[in-house]
Image (cartoon, rainbow, N blue to C red):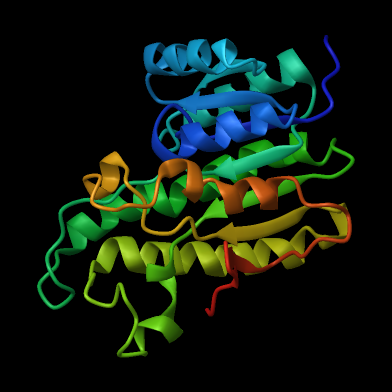
Length: 242
């Protein structure tokens, strides 16, 4: 079993911001495990990352499938023996109606990936993270999760009233705070990252902010030193209000 300085799993790592997180972590000397539902797409991402000089491998993982998440954790344990960084990046944004008319079924679909998927992946990977000397968990959130910002009439994204997506990220923020407290004695730091409104497939590329720019804060949180924060919510500019 080869020893690596740091090993990171990025769910949904084969495209968009997830891919850029993998690329930037790889450039920092981290062994990157590209979590992908489609192993062929994951393998293509690994090929591109390797061409850039990163050490990368693909891990097939669908965070909505408990058995597959368990299998992915077992594969990482067998191949690498531990995990230093988990970036819970996999997420969905489905076409939604406004909160007053959105369906419970649609909101449930969003939560299945964005909330329960984070819980599944984190629980499965925790035994591996506990083997790290400095475990880090980064949960991908959004400023759309902020209740305080939505109460501000000047909030620039305040018109995006997507009940499932927005509230799912609020739930992820709550999970971040609780996990940070629960895992403090294990030395595992847990933080939420707001990548900003980026040009990705999820947003229809309707932004001037690039996926590479969106990856900067999650990468910084993944590589936090021992004196770094835990239980926080951060963007490039600093803390984001809850």
